[in-house]
Amino acid sequence: MEAKKVALVMVDISGYTHFIRAQKMSAIHAEEIIFDLLEAVIDRAEHPLILNKLEGDAVFLYAEIGDADPVSVARDVAKQAQGFFDAFYSCAQTLTKERAECNCNACQRVHDLRLKILLHVGEAVFRTIRQFNELAGEDIITVHRLLKNSIPTREYILMTEPFYELVGRLPNMAYSSRVEQYEDLGALIVHVFNPQAPELRKNLIPPITFNLF
Image (tube, rainbow, N blue to C red):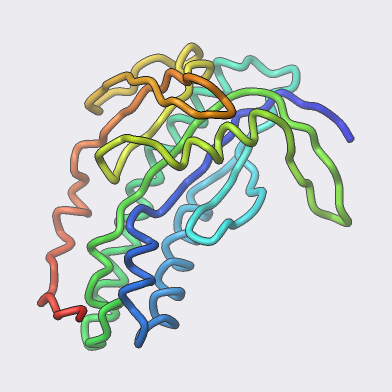
């Protein structure tokens, strides 16, 4: 095992739970849609980001800092995170058009899904299992805990205080800070950025809404 300084990125599709629960008759299409959207995000990621694993409706990535300038690495990661929104909505737009003829709820409600991105910097313990790197440690736990928070919006970039100290404010995004309280981690200061509605999302015209019940 080896401990390394890393930038951590969790990309989560917001609305996934409701999306799947509401689609009993179209579960296969729902899973296909989620996979395609996650794949679009993964395809947009580049060095220094490395894919660690898929976690249901989320993608976990990391970038090793090592001897590199942590500010440069964090800024690169933050810039890529902003680009994930375009990749996500471009794919959603394509899926909406390709699946327009399918009347199942999953295919008709792609426009309901949103993207949440969590950014943190800390230390991770690397354990190699066969050819795979398993990341462990308190900072890994922190990122996963932050998936459950009190932020009222479904689309944002959340930075922890350590990450925010490296990059500061993001351009063209509404900003706010808040404190999230966790029983095992205590009070965590987080910085939240809400993107302006991308043009690609504006073009996602909601199809006819079907009664789910």
